[in-house]
Image (cartoon, rainbow, N blue to C red):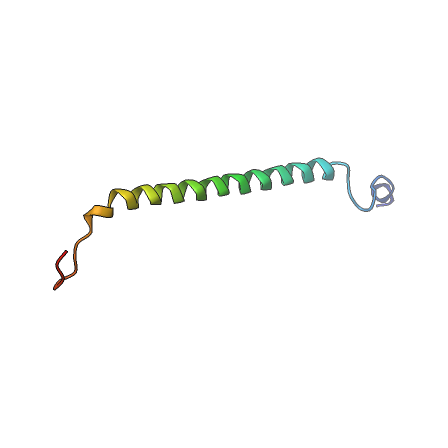
Length: 64
């Protein structure tokens, strides 16, 4: 146990820094892809609403 405490700094091993950097990169990539996906979803919903804007059915009892 003393070997572990002598060869680590503040309880961290030297592999923790690259792992932290990789974790930050993965989280940033996930956030970026999620943002792009939401933007693409909004664009597709706008395209669908434009396609079906003229296909509305009037309610019963009302004339269009």
